[in-house]
Amino acid sequence: MSILVRTAELRDVPALVRLRIANAERHIQLAPDIYRVPDAKAVRKYFEEVVSDGSKVLIPVAEVAGEVVGMAEVVMLAEPPGHQILVPRRGADIHTVVLDGHRGQGVGAALVAAAQRAAVDRGVSILYAGIFAPNEDAVGFYSAAGFGPRGILLSKEHQGPPAV
Image (cartoon, rainbow, N blue to C red):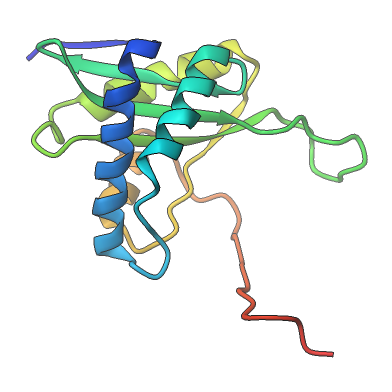
């Protein structure tokens, strides 16, 4: 199987929408209280904007036999402010999606490698792969690509106004 990885173009927007929706449906099975299926029109508008701009979001796509079967979305984070105590590093979030039927065939690995090269070319020194639900497949995938734990992300959800 030959995998072609290239930068997303406007003609890929319908495939990107399909990938986002498929990814949402898969994640809802993991944690329906965290994930949802977004509005397809809003997803289309988002991808049209970011693919046209290309400065804040990098999107490599993977083609197999002429069909887009996966994408990596690299979302550039804001430049670190000068007042913080952490050593300033340019960062980005990465999200990878591969359609069922193409997983386990090197598509995701090819996407992550391309995403890393594109991010480094933009000055990124750290990629974050946030996994917000028990998802052993995602943990295994990113771990195999060299990602590892970095600190602990704590959160607290509020239901209504804070107590006084």
